Structures are given as C-alpha cells and as structure tokens.
Image 1 (cartoon, rainbow, N blue to C red):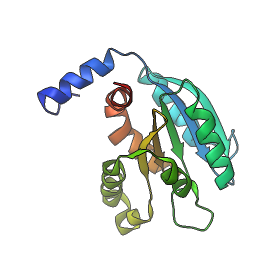
Image 2 (cartoon, rainbow, N blue to C red):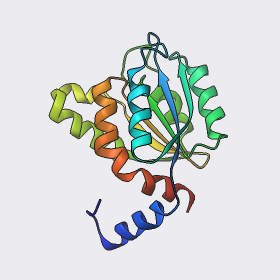
Image 3 (cartoon, rainbow, N blue to C red):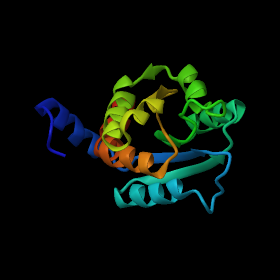
Length: 173
C-alpha cells in the first residue's frame, strides 16, 4: 500500500521486513461448530494468501470466563495478533467486548470508529450496534469484530490486511 506519509510508508517497509505475522483466530459463538465456522475458514485462506500464518484456532461459547481464559492463554503464545470474531453486539449473550475491553492495556479507538463508518455504508444505522474494538494486551495486538461473515470480510479487507504488518510491528518496536 502506497498511501500515507513518508514516515508511515517507512514504518510499513520496516514492518514488512519482520516477516509473516503469526495470528490466532478466535470465533465466539453459541451455535457454530468447526465445520460451520465459515469465518475461520475464510480467514485462514486470507491469512495464508497474504503470506502470514495461523498458529492457533479456538471456537468458544460467549461466556465471559471462556473469553478471558482464551485471551490469557493466547496472549502467552507465539501469536502476535489475536483476531476475534463474534460477541460484539448488545444482546445479553454478547460479552466478548465487555471482557476484552476490561483487559486491553492500550486501545485503538480508530479501529472501531472506522469499522462502524464502513459498516454504515453497507448496513445503514444498524452499524451502531457493533462494538468492534482493537487494542494491545500483554504485547499482543487484539482485534475483535462482529461475527457476521460480511463484517469479518469488511474488517479484514479494509482495515486489517492493509495494515497488519504495521500494526504488529508497532506493538513490539
């Protein structure tokens, strides 16, 4: 990607030289199985096509204790990015955002803001229901998106893929 200032482009070049980003995928769903987890299947393909590596995968229920346990487990792993999908709405069962937001040491408000702006172009005012978020926890980049396939694809294509190396590098530089 060539957009951005000279310093941003320089950062992207340095980040690219760090090599592939190791990613942990986490799907939060009360109904999906590994066989029906289309988000993880699609993301694995995109991650590989971009030259990065999926190093872990978890499919968990939207239970606060499970979200916290997987966050801590994968924060201690080799993954540099913990990529979550699901549990970001406002229904009583949607607790992913609540757990993650309590743990994030630094937040990236722009991720959620831009995600909702892009979502608005697709789903209109319903975009405000999303609590997509991103930040840093224990030296790992944490990104959490809604669980709809359209939302996962939007977040990956428009926000994550174009900046993944830069984001992962900024956390460790």
